[in-house]
Length: 182
Image 1: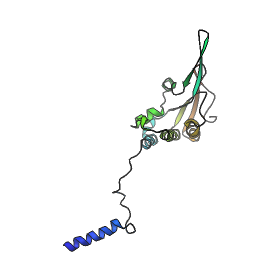
Image 2: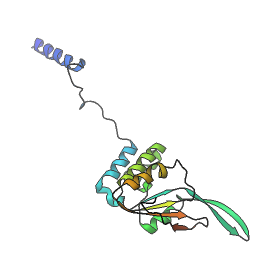
Image 3: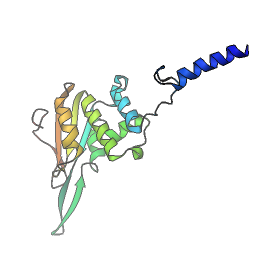
């Protein structure tokens, strides 16, 4: 009995220790936990979540707003993000931070690179109409210009794109830009 046990143990040792004889035991290896960005992207790409994603709003940039009070000119900065609540409410569209939250991910856990990947995944996945709110000044390296805009243009599921811009008086006006002319 003892010799059978040691023989079995010797064979098992050869297969577990010698990589040339055995495949890795992947079922026993620990699996990496998905990152917060992976979780958000999986949520976005899951068609069961379509109603929580579409229609979507994208935003970027800022406008310097000029205001005159008692004959004196004042300037202030109005970002697309600061105008977003009214914009999305009027269009009943979903924004990325809201979508990430619905995925069960805390927005504070995402790095700038994570946001870039999640934003691009959203632009590649959305369907139907899309609404965009832009300031007059958009950074040339913004996620809107580098990732979202090209992905939306290439996305065959996007039927229309309405582009709105913050004017120098602080109002938000629809532009003539479309999906084709973004």
